[in-house]
Amino acid sequence: MPAAVAGFFGDAGCVPLHPRATDDCSYGCRRTTWKRAQHQRYVELNPPAHVYWIIIDCDHAEVGRWKRLGLPEPSFITVTPETQRHHVAYRLTTPVCRSATARDKPLRFLQGVALALRQVLGGDPNYVGLLTKNPLHPCWQILRSERMPRYSLQELAAAANPLQKAAGAAAQPSKAVVRPTVQLSRVEVGGRNRALFDVVRKRPDKSMSPESYALLRNQEFPEPLPEPEVRAIAHSIHRYEAKPSQYGEKAQQQFRQRQRERGAKGGRPRTAADSCPWESMDISRATWYRRRKAGTLDDDALTQSTTEAAPARVDPKDTARPWEEFGISRATWYRRQAAARQTHLQNYSETPG
Image 1 (tube, rainbow, N blue to C red):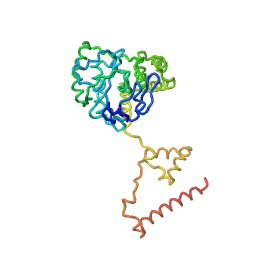
Image 2: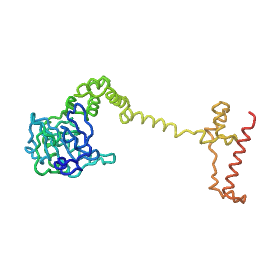
Image 3: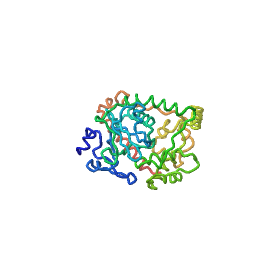
Image 4: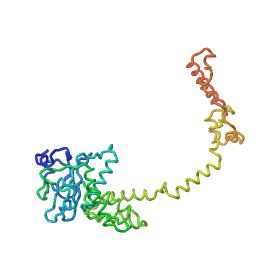
């Protein structure tokens, strides 16, 4: 880890060992070492398995909004000198695990806190938080106190949630819900798939096919996705929309109708497996099914298979140990039983017709 990186962040554990970095987001990003990443304009701060940083992308020029609203001091702010657009970064005291074995409750809490901070600070709702302005690059203006403050999720939630509720009540006096419009032209590389999926899934005209709508909206990205990838996203949406709902009113009515029909039949119908007709005909089960498939069984045998009760099967383990009557061991008794069945099947196969 270079000395400049360790000196700025304080420790190397809060950043990935091989971060994604790039000088131009329109050309994508790639993983590299910090020796190279510290000289590139955009860099990834959160490691793959944990979230140490909550980053808000603010496209307005009010850099000191956090101070005016009384929010906690950010860990650092990276500002574009020409436009005053900036990224606000808060470091967490305890990182949140986001690996395959992570718990859902801390992740949902993290998402709620990030959403509250984004709404209060006027952040971009389409920013996915993958890359941020590299605070080590000289092209950005860095606002950072001597100590880099760290906060728990509870502290950030206690400061941001009241402001979020107040801003929501002032901005939405009516009952109508205004949903933010996804601006694909501002989505950076790394969040295009999710943004396109949400836009196509919530398209206003459902009569338009997902594929044609996805191909049309894909051109709004600064760097459009490859056409096969767009078609794959549209195919997954089409497959979901074509699948009937399992919990709709129509599905519930069909389920109740099936239950009524099953109840009217008086329970499960008897089958040949219940009555075992092959035992009364002194043939094997497989032979009985072969004859029924060939159509050589008479009507009485077929009727018997569903009307007569199945003969009681006696388990040798439930009797008084039949091998003791013959004065032999249990293993010998079972071997002789198997040999007798094998001889019976062999004699039956050799019988003509």
